[in-house]
Length: 443
Length: 184
Image (cartoon, rainbow over all chains, first blue to last red):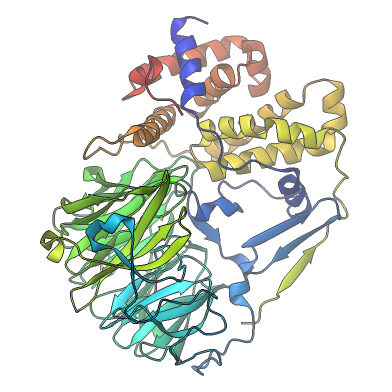
């Protein structure tokens, strides 16, 4: 080898990261057992996609089989279990589920850790932006949302309504999210992705105050669904719901409880969908069909369903789109890190990085709330201009004995108060924190 | 729609685990995955590539170990699977450049930038040039071994390597990486 070749070899060894997970004999045994004649397809069947945003963040929908795979190499059997989220017995006719509760304490399906009594809060993160922990249930990353005078968040096993004043969990109802998907509040209804599989996604609507089930809408879905936090479901300003799956985006009229339109994508598979604040544009993130293709954002005219533009970014996995009047926001990452970008006008060729985002496998999902875009993570918390993508104010998130603390999915209620999910692994603290951001974040 | 809660798949045709296979997988899967990452640019695809190759090696394991060449065989399957994917799906797209930074960040993001720059540079290469780079300069295979893995002549390997180096020379950010810079 000459000098240049040696430099290349040294650089390849130095820069190439260690894999986050190793292949096991059981992985190979499962592949041999379950798909003896299968032609390999990149990205399929990996359980990493929920963790590694550098991947495609995409889960096959076929027969709802592929969520959990257990290979029994030594036992000589291989078992594929369906997603527990699609288990039978759930009413689909609008009947409120038996587990919906109206009480001042968590239901039996909620974590055993009780929220602090009303008025009792805990100062966290060194008081960064006045951060106080008001509810100590460990909710799913990216799941906090709010509307009116209520906060909503998801924990594995239930959807919760939280009183922002006291932090108390007011209601819970049984809900196991099949994919990461933030609840969407439209009017008096909280919508979630209830299940996917068998060629359809089922949306469920819950009464925003009682969390009693009020709707169940099946949406035909050929292909697959994204497991990014804002991948599958979003709402337009007119209250219409948009569901991205496989190679199409369906529009659902929540009042009529039915699909009214469907846009077929020109290329790739949908990883995320967002609607502009004026309701005129639909942004669809699509992951490439090739192992090293590029992530694209397709922009559609909502009124006509015609694609208006397309641009691409040289990364394979990206998503979590949020649309503002200035453009579109999203996330991408490598390995265990994820960061947030902004693309003016929805043009990825003009995109730039907004935030360091999150490390350690945590998510950093942008949220448009209270007139600004909030970007959290494990490094800093930012409020940014929805027009320019520039930070209006930012603060560093401290570490606790070298362990990162974490803020995510900040949301602003009509009262003007801000809240975010919080996590401190060193102190074993997690929950909902109230924040007092600077005036620059007032939108 | 009613869904089956559990499905048991038949596995009668699966051969039993060969001797030494587990030890090989435990010892070498990390290196194989890193090669897969360089070939494909992402971990899920790398995992798929390695699993595919190991699944192909499983029924031939006794023969491969007798020839003392299991890793060469696994890497050969990986490269050929990668080339097959690219033959089927290659669309000639070339990365438009890196996501520009709004501001400089610390070492953690320099690492990420370095990895992105590396993958973006490798994306500029045609599949066979990329495979040669990974086998020769990362997997440390000889030109003869690389030629055997790719089913071509040693001369072709040399030509691919030369052209790849020329392309990588012009890749944004790669020259800095090759002369120092960020560690993984």
